Amino acid sequence: MPDHDAPLRVLLILAHPRPDSLCGALASAYREGAAQAGVTLRSLVLGELEFARDVCADSPENQPLEPDLAAARDDLVWADHLVFVYPTWWGTMPALLKSFLDRLVMPGLAFRFYGPGAAEWEGLWQGKSAQLITTMDTPPPIYRWLFKAPGHNAMARATLGFCGVRPTRILHFGPVRTSTPAKRARWLEKTRAAGFALRAGVHSPLGRAWQRAKPWLAALRLQFYPMSWAAYSLGAVAVSASLDWVLFLWGLIAIALLEAATVFSNERLDLATDRANANCGPFTGGSRVLVDGKIDPSRLRFATGLLLIGVLAVAALVLTLAPAPWVTALWMSIAAVTTLGYTAAPLKLSYRGLGELDVAFTHSALVVVLGGLLQGATLFEPVLWLVSAPLALAILPSIILAGVPDRPADQSVGKRTLAVRFGHLSAFKLAAISVAAAAGLGLAFERMHVAGGAYEGVAGFVIAHATLALGLLWWYAHKPAQKLQRIDGLLVALLTYMLWFVLIPWINLA
Image 1 (cartoon, rainbow, N blue to C red):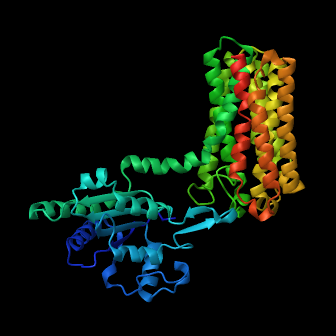
Image 2: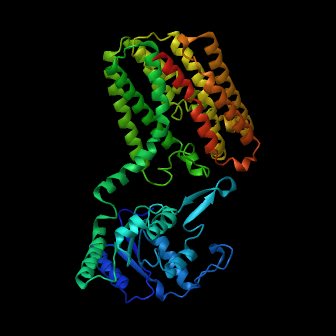
Image 3: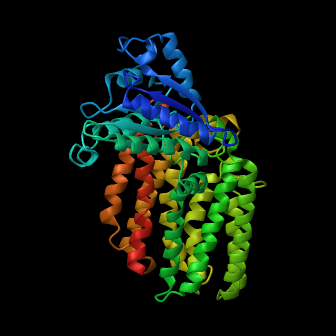
């Protein structure tokens, strides 16, 4: 990660075979502007480097680097911002630049493959940005709209984007063949201004705001919130044909703030296992913002405190409006203890083998009952608990199996998930039992017209999805343990399975 307190490190790469070309002049103009911006700049003139143009080994990392390429490799690693200046010939980059990229953009340096069958990849140049400056004889609008900008796409997306470089901005000038000296002077000035613009960094004001916000959005892990919101709304519509929208929305805000505080707390308290986790993905291993140094732990702790203050303030308002304030206060206290207690002391439920049950409860009965309470229901309103039961069983499989890729890391720090306690095969069996139990209970409720007909029509959706989920569970369970590092497809199937146990009751009861 770049040091944001140090000057921006810029690598300027001139990729025209003739340094005395228009591209050479553009490179000089950019260098002049960047120098005035106060960045730290290094330059590479590819035409002056001595290296074999072709990859003759079975893979570029297996071909020894000539001294010039070894030095260029170090420059690529060093740079925060890559600037390529080159002509567009026959729609794309010149052979010189292509050869340079062929030799140096290699696994281990710019990207890596991982996962079962090495089918997943990760760009290792995340945090770097780029600027492309290219000349062409094709009028730029024709190049972009008629030819679909093949060279721009090859560089910005297929090469730099694949390696994690973002953003990549593009300056293209043309047609060169019919340009006048005055027009070329304007191109040079525009290029010099692009170099000077680095004084404010590589991002626009809006882009800088987005860069500051991105780690926090990642830390929030918003992909997990809709489930609890949907369950909360199910509890509300299950007991009221006409919602008290003011109470409903304030309750929703309280849930969102509490979930955000819990996610932040989990991120900080699970840092040891996240650091040890080599199998992280969109559903496992945390958001990585602390592991990657994108957010300081003390700032995350402070943000957690602010969120909890917000929870208390909103809860106090809700209690002044709630039909049964004392019962609601008790239930909201239980909500705070069970959600924060997932990783926080003294409960630390996820470290005691109770984390999966905790998540199943908090994302089903806890929020369903709260939704009902705020609409005037009693704590033990039968319909609320009845619609929660199949939902809790449907939530369990994905939570249990999320611990399978995390198992080695969790085991190393003493986190006792079900996958750690009983092994990955038992985790698959428990998940399969939960899938079948959720389906069976839902179908039984449909047949018996339980909970006001909440599960009418569920069979047509749940049977097919449960069959698919059980088939995938059987298939994954028979894979070698070393191929269970990523099970994202299975987790998606199980996460979507639980939707039927909210959507169908919601439609029937609304």
